[in-house]
Image 1 (tube, helix red, strand yellow):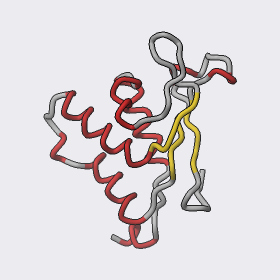
Image 2 (spheres, rainbow, N blue to C red; image 1 turned 180 degrees about the horizontal axis):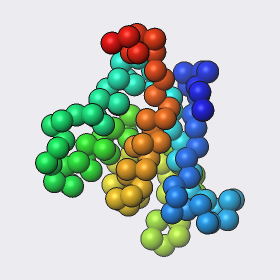
Image 3 (spheres, rainbow, N blue to C red; image 1 turned 45 degrees about the vertical axis):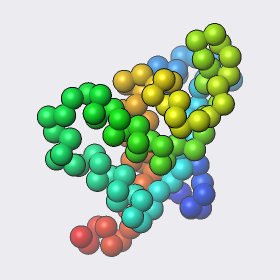
Image 4 (tube, rainbow, N blue to C red; image 1 turned 60 degrees about the horizontal axis):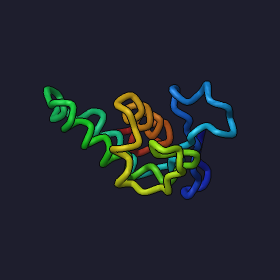
Length: 120
């Protein structure tokens, strides 16, 4: 998908939730990134400093990046089945290891590649 409006958001349903009835599927909303924000977001994926890091360190970095691109969710529930209001600080408790990676890579899809990025 291509963002035509800088405020445009895109829903993302995690693979683990695809079998859930559509009306009940948890959906995470990602915003499009462009320019310096997009470069910073993409850079995290290419950063050699992450090589050899333990999982908690990498997860913390991914969650920090997700806090930039993730703007909301619906149908996310706590352990008692009660709806959770979107708060970035809850990401660590809401997302599994697979979910963190999946959402981060979904965010990469919404980073616009500028002409200047291609030339550099």
